[in-house]
Length: 636
Ligand SMILES: Nc1nc2c(ncn2[C@@H]2O[C@H](COP(=O)(O)OP(=O)(O)O)[C@@H](O)[C@H]2O)c(=O)[nH]1
Ligand SMILES: [Mg+2]
Image (cartoon, rainbow, N blue to C red; front, side, top):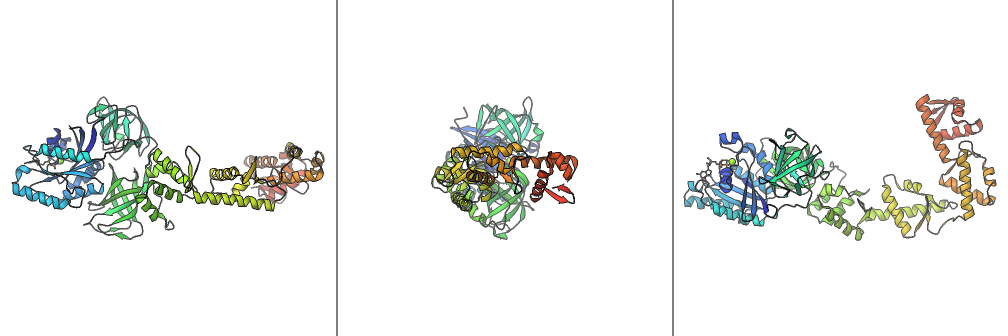
């Protein structure tokens, strides 16, 4: 029944004692002051909640405290609101927390609102008109300009129907939250309910959640199961973005959950301690210094942050700048999310901003492109943003990084990749989770490979081609294997190169082996491999082949070039497998018997005679596997 109603979250705002809580009760029939202390003292301390279904709209009311001491509670509620109900008492008009709450809503990007001019029963018509004019003047130039200003009295009920109509009209303008994105519920309350266990509540700001879902509690990362869901005090199969939501959780004690934690779809959100953002300092405050410490509030969470200004030592009131914020505690933040900043002491709201990159890297003075990149994040189209991200990842951008930084949906990401790949701006490598690399970088890599191969053929006219691994390491250690493979595959597909097993060569170039040469080459290799460390004499191996001496010599060269065989001394050639095995045995010897080994011990270990042992030890010295010390060797 509730699923097809439009859900709109209304947040009250305004100075203490201006009648916010009374008005919510007059509208909904529910007293939002739920705490015993609130009832006793007659003030709102924490967030209160109430619901109203009216002409096809389900309103969720969040009643906030007006007292300046409880602004941080107000902020926890304000983050999810669609519509501000600015409450101003006709007999007092605009007061400090009227201004502060209104500033906060502006900084949070609230787009819609209604002004309730309360306690209309306490003033006469001329005072009412005066207050109305004053408010019109005050909201000029803001999102509230032209919004309804409705005189009401919670005491007499005058104006309540008109206010409901005004709320309804404003609610029709609200765009609503996106239920198709990943589920995220910033928690504003956690408590135990008899017979149910742990219940958490919050404004569902994206996605949907239903009974039986597996969810993740952040920042801890615990995986939990949803036992039940309620919205507006009624059990539902699923709750959707834009609804006040209560989730009954299995697997966690309510004392382990606090306001500011986030319930989310598993694996979709990352915690962060550094963000890049656009920050605005309110007019009428002090200037902000570079590295100033502040209170940081986003969704229902708060922490302390240090603000680093990009390219400035201070920010003047009323100005906006790009900034890096270092958070004292880890938080879950997404791109496009708004936040509020309050002065460290005395605590007043001084500004706020927009998260551009929730997973920012530490600022580096050599990173000259950062400001331009952040401007692209702020103003660019999806394709422009993705192209800029790829440009800043010269070794390739992993697919998983894209949603983590941008919050985009899978379909949006795939679409942007398609556009950029078809224009050649980006090369997408792999299907499922592609690695993205700049088109220019990829082209240069292909050219480098071609050049290396040309060079190799010039230097090694006898060799059929270069070993793949050797080619890769000649290109640079930091090149990711899949990028190298993709570049190579493209050159092969373009028929510029050919590959034969592990060997790569210029297409149509070099030596092509005859069938009898293939067989002879295999025979040479087998002879040395089966010998182990007791290798046959080279001339005997070559003499035993069916091809003539000159061709046999050429085949041996190819095997040495490929490094399948290794020349240890002018007379002795070993298979590389035998040498690798020998090095492993030496390292095992070092572990069990110590780092020194004598010539007799080496002969014992390997079972070979002096004829092989001495050249091998000299080879190992050259390879820095061992070092000679008197009559012994030290295993390095
Ligand atoms: N005369 C009159 N008093 C009101 C009206 N609305 C609220 N009040 C009183 O003003 C005081 C503060 O109201 P409350 O709703 O707690 O204000 P809040 O702090 O903004 O939530 C209470 O004593 C209310 O009874 C109204 O419309 N008319
Ligand atoms: Mg109140």
